[in-house]
Length: 120
Image (cartoon, rainbow, N blue to C red; front, side):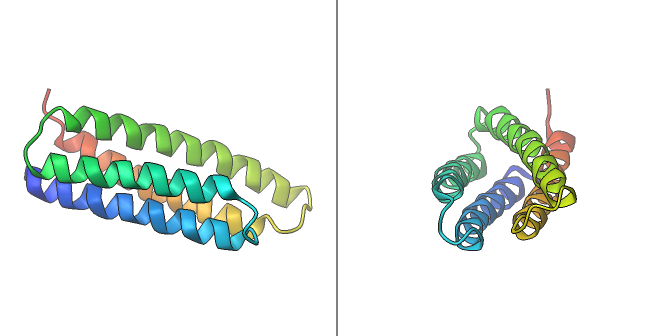
C-alpha cells in the first residue's frame, strides 16, 4: 500500500473518531462531554497526521501507529467496563458498549493495516 493510500485511510479513521465522538455524546443524552471533546480533538489530530502522512512525512507514521495502538487499548478497556456494567444489569450502557466495540474493531483493523505497512 502506498503512502498516499495509507494517509487517506488514516484521514478516514480520524473522521470516524470524530463521528463516533458526536454519536457517543448524543447516545449518552448529551451528558458525556469527554466523548465529544476526545472524539473531536483526537479525531482531528489523526486527520492532520493522515494528511501529513499522505504528503510523505515519514515521522508521522510512527506517531499515527502509536496513537492508533493507544486508542485500541483504550477502547478495549472502556468496552470491558461497559460490558461489565451491562452484565451487572446497569441500565443505559448497551448503546455505549456497542459503540466502543465497533470503535475497537475499526481501531484493530487500522492498527493491523498500519503495522503491516511499517518499514523499519
